[in-house]
Image 1 (cartoon, rainbow, N blue to C red):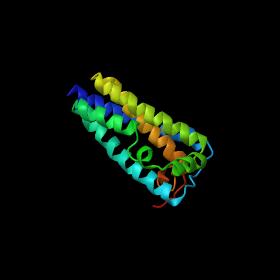
Image 2: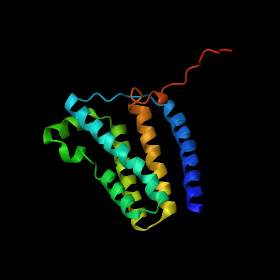
Image 3: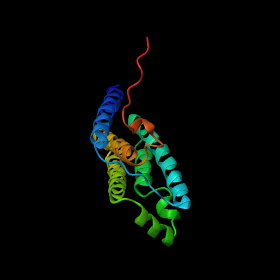
Image 4: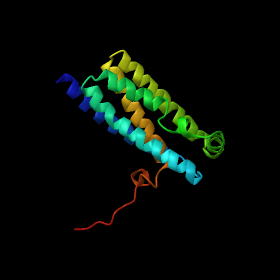
Length: 164
């Protein structure tokens, strides 16, 4: 029961961190990713796989399913599709097309997934929970900067008309 409460507390903490990350990033200039269609398809496929993995993690943490947690963290760390499917030409085009800030966020995200996998190997519930919360924070930070069209909730706050 303590672990269930800890997971709930972690989720509340993540919501607070996401709000903080959103406030910090709202002051930054947002950039869009202008990728060729073939690279955009691969990136979208990668994001779908990451979403599945990220959704698997809290259940694995709550159940102390260390093998699933380690495997998922490792899969995210090593990339599901992009690193395996890119041709040399696509990799070069991607490197030129992506902003440096995106590349840094992506590198940090994948490194964090590796740390999550190491926490799972150590069977460290608290550390795994921490790395998961930071992983999700990384998602929100990148989406708020580069994917507002896909995630309009990260856009500027607009006032709604007041109705009675």
